[in-house]
Amino acid sequence: MRLDEVPVGSTVRVRKLCGGPILKFMEMGVLPGTEVRVLKKAPLGDPIEVELRGYRLSLRKEEAECLEVVPCGSP
Image (cartoon, rainbow, N blue to C red):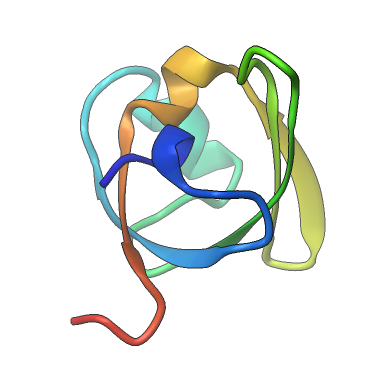
């Protein structure tokens, strides 16, 4: 599943960076294995506010579409 498909309030783990601004994700600490909690979504799904590594981050929908995630507790 992609990060843009995750419901608000859910926590997931980044499985894979699927393209897009990979270097930008890495600089922000968004790496495979990182836990991400979805805090808010704007009415049309853009932007998406998430929390990871103790800070909050807003991602555009097209950025969130580049992050493949799995529910926490999944391999």
